[in-house]
Image 1 (cartoon, rainbow, N blue to C red):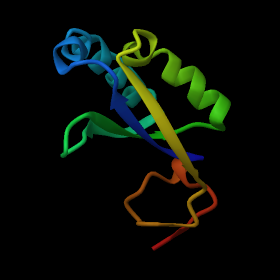
Image 2 (cartoon, rainbow, N blue to C red):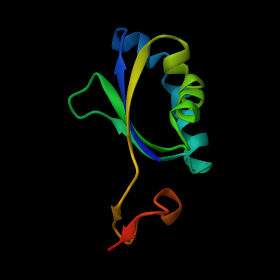
Image 3 (spheres, rainbow, N blue to C red):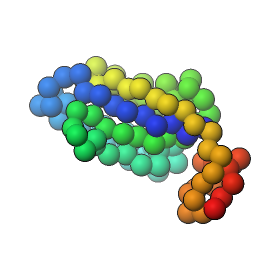
Length: 102
């Protein structure tokens, strides 16, 4: 299942930035393991977006709990699940096993 995860900062940006290097290391680890496809700050500011692949919401919750932004209380997240039905040919097949690739 694919999850669109929006992180929303709860603390001033100066406090968020104190955890940024650890957050980026968590992102990099999950990118290498194939659990995160992309991540980046929101263009409007105030948080970020993560596109993740997890079996279910419980697995996502475990992964997100390991993010220092969540663990330190500087951000919260909301997630929306999707089971891809259609995907671009370049999209990783392991993330959309039931999708029709175009």
